[in-house]
Image 1 (cartoon, rainbow, N blue to C red):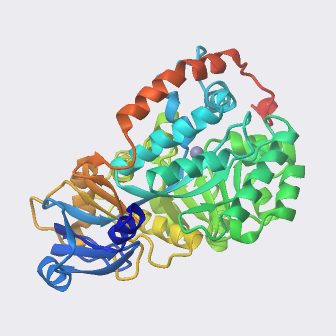
Image 2 (cartoon, protein in one colour):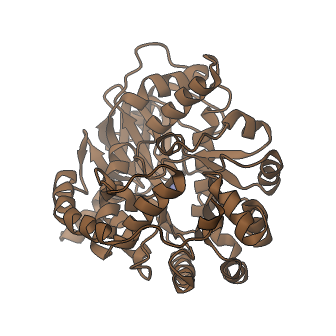
Length: 466
Ligand SMILES: [Zn+2]
């Protein structure tokens, strides 16, 4: 039998992840103490007690979870792969406000990107996603010097890595209106081409209200298919509202609503500085706020009051905003940060468990997979084993405690995405992070040199408003 035959036979073989505490996810929390998941191809066949699952599929290849937690593959609803090569970069000028952080760091870095650094940044980030058990990621990309085809470079990287992605290009007028129009075309082209792709989907991306002209929003309103949704930064810092009002006379949320962008496919990253009336609008339209607690702390922009916005009826998901790719650690940070801010050692258990569930809901919509984010028969075979054997009883009602005090600090032993083992016994099978870091180090001096040759103080909408 030839190589192809062997490959298809391997794909159709049944696999079982066993010897772990199984937490299947799903709307009703449950725990199976000695649990197992069987899958074939890209679908889960069965979940249950280890002995029963093994009896049912005696020929299956066993992946031993080492007594740790078996969880659904994690989902990240706001990431920026392109930031991967900013680590250690000195902008060479102080950044004292959030607009300065954008203008002097990120908006220079994105202009310095070329195809090679876009590709390498995506691979570095994808390797980290695999390492921390994330199998589905929503990326928000910008590379003004290389717009057309940039999403294909990222899609190819994710294909090589083996994880799923919902990709978009950040439309903005801050590099001129032609750049905004090119961003619109890139989003539309990519959305069309990936419409039926099971692993990679397009979303319509926009940078933020304060950097898009009314004319650009008008084009988006005319041309964006509703199903493409919208992934945008909103009210991360007061500059969004101040600059939008100064330049366009209305609040960001009003602009988005007027452009028809607010519905259950809208992903609104941050939302920290929205008013109560704005939050009621978000809740009414079914749009999701994406909480990025580590990034918000890093930038000193304030924090989303998750209990408050949840009480107002807003959906809230969780992202990392380019800070890292470790979703359980982001959950832990959200938990500790909430307690620290509220000065309340009882806070967190009411609303934080729903953050990961909301990420599943978002991913289900965009990938048209009603069971994504859950371990159940017929669901995509996206699952992980986290190396945190529970040292105390683990039950439905103390799961969050086991996540934030245990799993969030533990390495991931196995990562499986659509049935393919991407991390096995802590080792990558598709990417080589050491080699990737080496490649990145050879590209970083050139990227940083281009960065330092670029000016800041770029005229962007809202500069005058500050
Ligand atoms: Zn972001």
